[in-house]
Image (cartoon, rainbow, N blue to C red):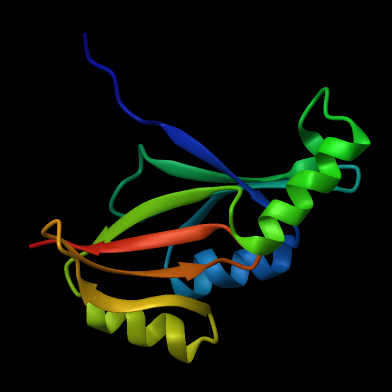
Length: 136
């Protein structure tokens, strides 16, 4: 059996801020930008990995959520405890410097972890946690 990860979903609250972060700071390409009424789905991914993507989706599009659940998700997003993704790069220090210079919210500066990896972390404009590991 041949199974791959095609796309993962992260919520967004501001499409323009998300584009600026993922496209302009991280260097991801925009693969789709779909609008439906007031909602917008943006599919982004690394240019050298055309089969792997992140879909930035509006929270309001999740079917079956109650108003209380939407409010709770909004609160969790604001705290950065709702969604996350791990990324990796060969030059962690350069990417960290680029994101920091772009005013991305730093959660953790690059550090050698006791479990054998070196990483840092940021929050995207919606509060999603991005851990970035150094490839060695």
